[in-house]
Image (cartoon, rainbow over all chains, first blue to last red; front, side):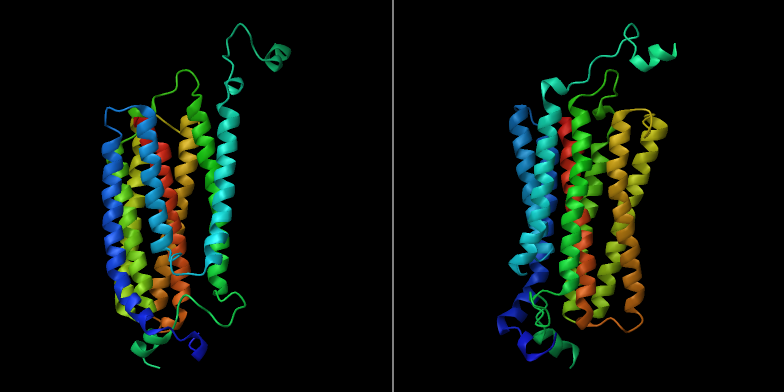
Length: 124
Length: 206
């Protein structure tokens, strides 16, 4: 890795020096956002609004961690694409499952003693 | 090549020896993390699905959870991520001493997080009578957060191993990719918790 082909430009070294303060500032920002999330759940606003705010805040935290702490901002785009493929598949699976099981027809039927399952009837 | 000179010349975001220009270890870790996203996505979905249709008689999650403790755990994990990022930054500059202190702090924060989780689990089981077998909430909650806790435990063991390895004198800035790969894993554990904190805990309070 120390071959001449891998020599970094001069500004690269300055960037490495500045990263320390970038990381500290981002960590402080993440802590503040976590505090905001905690306050948000106690606000007397509409549920959909609070839900949206929480989703946005956690997405911001998520993006800051992956692009700065995990270096995606400075790495090749291939790493971002690779990770986002997995992330997209996970999000799509979650969306599909929640849509499927969130439907009215997916609600579990109430079980009463007067209507036991077939297997129980057979044993009895 | 001295430490300082190496730090000034090595580009840690480019590896000319691979066809992609990315170190193979880094690609391997990103591919693993992408697959782990799907794993946690399914666990979180399962929990949310059962929370959409809770069976009659289910204990309200708000009565079980302690949002103050979970917020503290979240803060601790975020700070551990900062220390991990600083550890990677230090080894990339060849500053072994700084990397060791940062790793040690990361391990310390990881242990605090695990301690909080053990306390939370004990509280749920013995005080709130919520176990993995007596309700759907317990099954999905303990499976999800327990799997995450296991990831944190693996991370702490890995960090400890790397810390010990650094004392052998074989860890230099040229092996920074080993610390960086470990850092990617640790930050992933953090981002999963960011999602769990919102989806599992905070949404119960609105």
